[in-house]
Image (cartoon, rainbow, N blue to C red; front, side, top):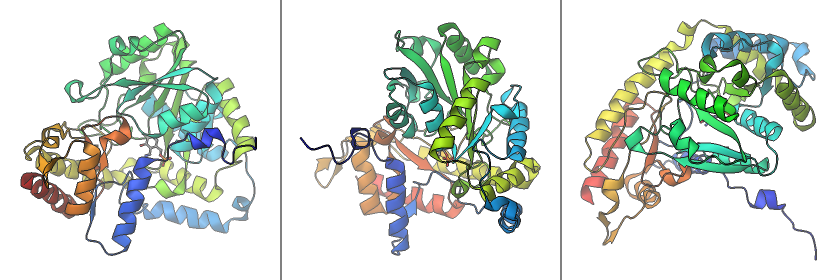
Length: 401
Ligand code: PMP
C-alpha cells in the first residue's frame, strides 16, 4: 500500500472557521459588495504611529538584520516580565518569557511542550476554535465543558469536576473570553485556582484580552490567586495583537516555570528560530509606552459595546449578555431559529449566518464554530456607523421572517 499523500494529523485538522469567514467577508468587500462585517477577530485601528516609527527605525538598524536568540530579544523579554508582574500578580524572571509568533503560536508551543498522547485538557465551551485543534495536534484529548447564557458562559469547580478523569492534565482558562466576552471575577478566578491546585492540574491562562475590559482596569488574573505549587504549573499566554492593534505583526509570548520555558525554547529553536526582530522592536515600543497612548482604542470599544448590545437587545428573538471584555458579543438566536424563511424553518445558527450573509449582506460567525450552536458571534471592532447599519440590517431581516 502506498503511503498517504497528506499525513493523518493534517487530514484531521479543521481549518479555522473564523479566519475562513473573515476571509470571505474581506474578499466580498474587495469586490465592492456593500457588506457589513462583524466577523473580524481584530481591532480595526491602524497600529499607533509611535510603534510603527520604532519598527521603521529597527528596520534600518543592521543589528536587526540577523538571527537573534530563539527565546526573544532580551529587551523585549524584560518589558514583558515587568508588565506581567503588574498585571498578572506573579513574580516573573525574564528567563521565563519566550517570545512567539503571536498568541496562537504561544498556545501551540505550550501544548507541544506539555502534552503527551492521551492527556486530557478541559476547555470551557464556547471556546476559541484553535484550542481543541492544537491540543489534538500535540496528541492531547480536548474535553469540552459546556456553558451557556444562563451561567454567563462561565465554568465553576463543581462543573469542571464532572469532566475530570485520571487522565486530566490541564485546564485552559481565558478571561476575557473569545467568543463570549465573559470575565471571571476575583472570587471566580480564586475558585478556579483552588480547584486546579487541589486537582494537581496545569493551567494555561490565555490573557490576550486582559486589558480590554469595561468597567474595570484589567481582568482579574488567575496568577494572583495561585498557590506556590500552582505557580509551578501555571503557563501564561499573551501578545500585543489585540491591545495595540498589532495583529499583523505577529508577536506573542509564553511565560512558564523555568523548565517548561526551556522546553518551549528548545521547540522553537528547531521550529522557527527568532520572531522577526523588527516586530519585536515594535513590541518593545508598544509595551514600554504609557497606557494613555493607546487608551483611545479602549474608549472606542466601550462606546461601540454600548451601541451594539442595546441595538441587539431590542430585536425580538435575540437574547444578549453584556460582555465585560474583549470586543465580541455572543447573542443567543434560539428565539429566531424556528421562524420560517421562504417556507422552511431556519433551524440552525449556521444557516442563519449563511442567510444573513446572502440576504442581509452582514457577516457574522455562527456559534457552531465555537461548539455553541444557537448563538452568533459579532465582533464590534468596526466603525460606530457600521454597527448601526449592520445591526439595522439584521433587525430588518429577522423581523421579515
Ligand atoms: N487567544 C485568543 C482567545 C484569541 O482570540 C486570539 C486571536 N483571535 C489569540 C489568542 C491569538 O492572537 P494572535 O495569534 O494574533 O496573537
